[in-house]
Length: 305
Ligand code: PPE
Image (cartoon, rainbow, N blue to C red; front, top):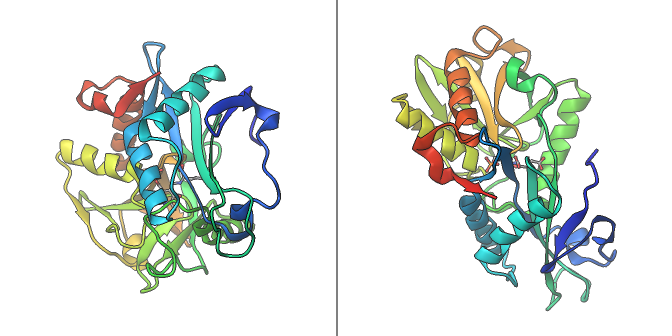
């Protein structure tokens, strides 16, 4: 459960947590056209807090708005500043930031008319997204019975609220069956992404990840690609099948919430030795050094509070 904090930023100002409410006629609640982001803030070794790749998250938020035809009543700078302001107002040194834009009340029916576009920013503390020990031991994934969106059915490059019905159904199914995460295939049957993460595999020292077609362009995915290149590990962005995943030496998920989570098993088959592999562990170590301000090479990724 999300632990209640002091303040939520809503439509331009900080208000008490309990007052951040909406009417049931909120258009997005009925039809799902809203957009959101997920950003992490880390406590660095020098005691300061830094938001990880804030600029890229704000850019994606505005891309989602463009794709979703929502005209945001704030500038990029205003939203970025508000993310930091909300963290500060809550005294949160490390945590998750959730900017959300939605269509408010007014007209009913699919056509939203000129209902106002509203924006909220919520922050909370979030530990290991895929469960206790997930980052250290790896998780068990199951290929979902739900296919990931066809690129002309949903706009997969936007973080649109309604897109996540597919994720929620897949995740609930996987959890009910006793797995930690749902792996989804695209409409052609190739590996796409998980309910809330991108996926990577490693074989013979080469890293492979799905191309940016049916997936959300993950910012953690991009970070891992850049890290791997700086570590001189070859990376290819290419479609792959589930059997290629079964026979990979290593596999891991990436996401803001999930960070870099090793996959130790898929569809009851162990990946490699059934535990986090050396490449995954090395990437995790470098990633966590960067987010905690210990690696000057990628210091432009950190936006200090
Ligand atoms: N694919 C999907 C479908 C997705 O939701 C995420 C993030 C990613 C890939 C990875 O993107 P990025 O965070 O930029 O590396 N999922 C967010 C939502 C999780 C949730 O349950 O809510 C997240 O990790 O913040």
